[in-house]
Image (cartoon, rainbow, N blue to C red; front, side, top):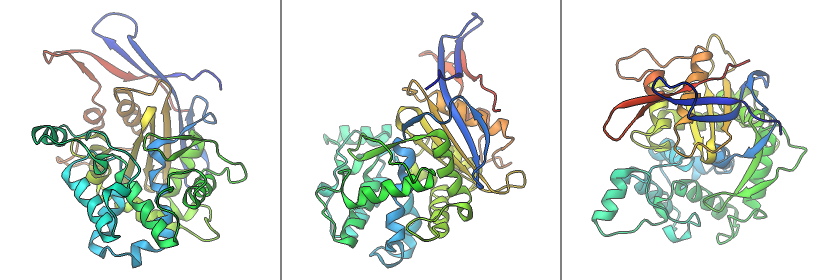
Amino acid sequence: MTRLPPLVEASRGPAEGAEIRNAGAIAVVDGAGGLIAAVGDVDAAFPLRSTTKPFQLLPYLLDGLHRDGPRGPDELMPDLAVMMASHAGEAMHTDRVQGILDAYGLSPEALLCGAHWPYSSSARDALVCGGESPHNLHSNCSGKHAGMLAVCLKNGWPLKSYIEAQHPLQTRIHDIVATLCRTQNTPLPHSIDGCSLPTHWVSMRGLGHMYAALAHPEGAPAVEQRSISEELRLLFTAGSRHPEMVAGKGFFDTRLMVSFNGRLFAKGGAAGVYALALAPTIVYPQGLGIAFKVEDGDGDARARPVIACDILRQLEIEPDKSAAVETLDQLAGAAIVNVRGLSVGAYRAVFKLR
């Protein structure tokens, strides 16, 4: 892999030079499969982490569980949103995942995602004040795991090994990801994600193809010898119309989608990966899939909002013009604020899409 160029710099006050530099790669792909803009080595592969969640949910739809499963039609769209979420562990998330499990006769102990403290500070404080510890439902991946268990029940596949790479569900997901990132003739390497599932290594060009398929389902390649345009459209609509389920109150993914009012689906992944699907517009009639990786992992999650907002700005894609939505500048949250509340510097994008 060639050395990746800087995407973001952080500076404090009038002093010359950057205190922090975040390097990375960006790919912008349209629904016809064309690479229309790029920065850095877009063919270098990285683990997809949680950006792959919408596509890990496709077996649930391909098997018809959204039509003939035990959950009613009123629950469908928020259920799909939480099943492809990296949710904050708020009650609206844990209650919904519990409802999915209940409908399939499963307990939270069946989830093999493990437990961690909720990302939501209010949900975390509620557990502490109640003298409780987090459980599997609080994992940001619990919805995804619940959906996978439902697929296993439908197909009579083992429940206790559904996280293993050689399990029928995981080999099926591998093939779906390989097809949508357009490397179906080459097996994808994988690592183990934080929730113990396989996470496949894919380039930003490949991830851009995957999100372009969400943005423009009619252009997606066939999966399992059939068109999946209906399923991809459902995923895009569920996530973009229920952004609070995909992340949580106050979180960047949710705020960004709210500001675009159903025109954009946004999904972050651990270790600096991020992806966006933009519905077709006059300028981009086949939609866009946008994918980028921050090489150092963006541990404090400051670089990704700046990069995502600047990509949209350079592509001349703005939030809805309404007093109820935030601007790209507000969403980027570029200011560095110290413990006294003083603005002492800022993050800024330093890349140019080519």
